[in-house]
Image (cartoon, rainbow over all chains, first blue to last red):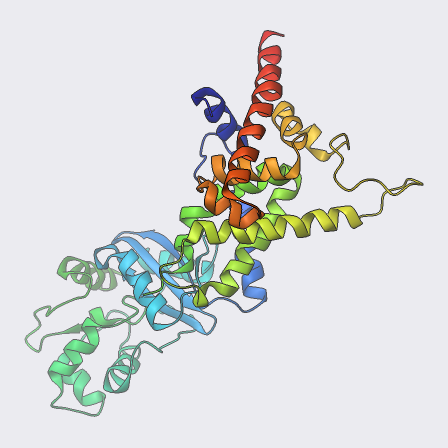
Length: 206
Length: 166
């Protein structure tokens, strides 16, 4: 095919000549809606912008299953979800709206408790017990790793609490940032220490 | 490791849509695209990891296009005689769309030429792969694509020139 015919032909076939490599959003929405209606999807996801950068939010039909910071590499996180939960993964730009709104309000300092259905299937055993306890630490308060260990039923498992926090599948929503060292220093954080300090300051100020 | 299905949608969704538009026209393309990706999503976990995803999607789209044609042919038409299902002169919703010349030229092609042009020139599949999708030999698929392009050059480009000089 000659160059000019090829170009003309290709351009004319695109639905939006200005953005030939993007799908019309109504086609994508229709696919997600039909796939949901037929219960075909393992995971849907979207991203939201936050003061801590772009966040990946992923859900199964049972509830929110993963929140990830950009530094955690969203593509790698999606591949991990595909491997561990199922490969029928679709982006749903208008999905998870309720959580997106609650996150906005949380970052604005006007919402203390993010309340959405959670799917905790990515956490097991003691780590899952720890996550359960983290959800009880109120907005604006902190606990030490030792206190969390004791409250989770294993007072000497301070290090295991640390790894439960480090592998928290839903940071921010499950507030592992509220766990600090006994002396008051920050300890670690899955989103980096600046993010942890930001969240603690946000909750102190509110 | 199986990739998330979203990768197939992002990487191949737009080109499959162009193929559906080339083979069916813009009015039926959206339906064919939706049916194609819903079927693909269903079958995705069973697709071998080293499969040629684009060729696989075009194969599904080819079958869905046949279904869409059958459905279109079944729609009640208020005439006494049963019309030919794929007459090139049948007026279609394509005529109300902006690039009339393109849709007219494509609709005027025999189905096999139209498919071979779409699968080779729009989707970029090798003629051998096009042949496995449409049936027949690689040489026949190559000839159908070449004949289709020659016809498009006569009709579509000629029309374009006329339009641009009006």
